[in-house]
Length: 249
Image 1 (cartoon, rainbow, N blue to C red):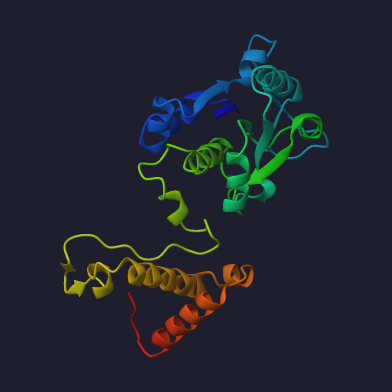
Image 2: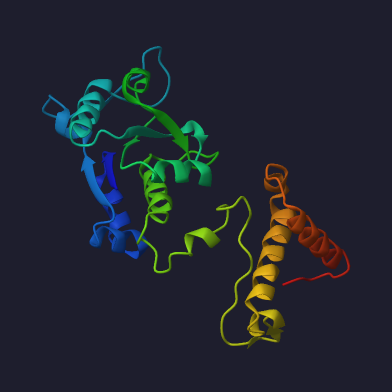
């Protein structure tokens, strides 16, 4: 999968492929990354990419002419969807990540200052996307988040093919609790079922923990998900256990 990023700070975005899962994916050719700097399309000696907003007000706005040329040059090489990272966009959730992972190419547009000229959105942007209800200095961090989330779903990107399927939100639930050695840590032991060797019981325990954790922390996710009969039984068991104990693993 190819990611093209329109950004004033290409060196910042390049960090996403310098290490970790995304770095290994780039080394293996699973993903590729190219940055396009709007300053390269500025025509004045100062390489100006921003100007004062019409109507007055604080801050500056990224100029449309530079951005349009950068986007259109990127589209010549990458016919993918143009995604603008913006606080006004739709939330980036696992469903949208899965949708984007099914595409071959994506162009990510990173704004700065007070934003970009609205006409760029009208002419070239296919989707506005937000990583949360807060404001960052620019879209680069959002683009890096999106690249990381999408890359995890690409075949061969993770060390184990089932890792992504067990992540939080993959099936509409939070992930279950995880444990590793030592078996006891400052007086806290791992749940006995995880040492049983019974894979069916372990899978059942993990599903119960995922349902219970979602019920405790993100109940709205359960409301949006249709539970199976077996899942309802496990959730009710968890709730009963939770209400009768002050502390659960």
